[in-house]
Length: 394
Image 1 (cartoon, rainbow, N blue to C red):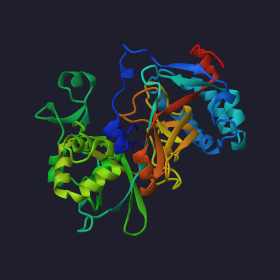
Image 2 (image 1 turned 90 degrees about the vertical axis):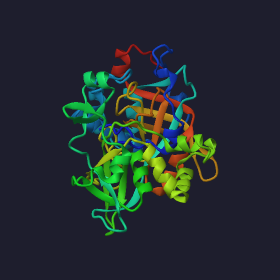
Image 3 (image 1 turned 180 degrees about the horizontal axis):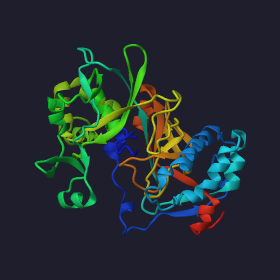
Image 4 (image 1 turned 45 degrees about the vertical axis):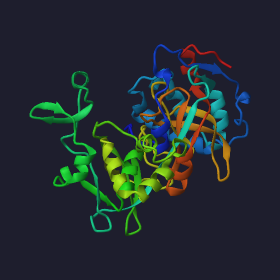
């Protein structure tokens, strides 16, 4: 759901059903890495690595240019020097030699989490909605850019007030405006509107996803990315619908939530207002139309290759062999593929935890919204990093 777009890209199902795993608690046994031979990785022999290698090369360019992913320490991520050699080699390697490149320069490790050994994998996507650069009766719902009075407080202020984000009122830190206040027009006279949408429900879902493409009346489109959040608490509409018996918990999903909201517009507006959290956006260049929006690494996301991970464990750019199942037309289907860690999210918590980027548009939104499966991860670490971490070799 996007720098790190904290609500970026997280589908509704993730927000409803995912809780912080116990592995986040220091009292629980930590995850460990178990060496595994390439031939023992189910699906690895004969797999098509070209799309994954192209995504990894994009990550390498960012690593060599900014080392953005290393500004936050991670348990198994190492530092930029651990990745410099393999990234320079990646950029000089033709795609047809990707398999030899990985097998010669990396070691493979199965990730074992004693707290949640079955893992958890969900999905997200970049939605597309109707929109306009100007307001009209057909497009009455404003999309706001980041207000200049929204600030991030330092750690001392946060510890004292409990506020991570907010504003200064009469010289003192205070919470920012609620969703109800903003939608009632509290920001309407500040020229913050960057786009307009047809539906308040679409606008709400875009905020949960954290990014979107707006199809404009002239046939072009604009890409919106996460810019900031208000800092107010997030409340899941799916949870409220289940708690109030409007929908059975087992039926909660993006499609069922949208259907209920469309059938109950007045109640939907009130439910949306109960979620005080509000997300602000910025327009970003469309760039390569075959790629999705930039993730936390600021690299364009690749459908069914980019993975959002828990950055407490993994740095951006880490290759991850994922073995799970994804929703198919009739039933779940095996999904074994080399992914690249290029994003993160506040609900992505755990060493064997990932959010698969499914792509852009309504068609991929359906499987992304249904995606919730166990599985396993094999991470690929540069040999220099594995050696420095004292990890055994296969």
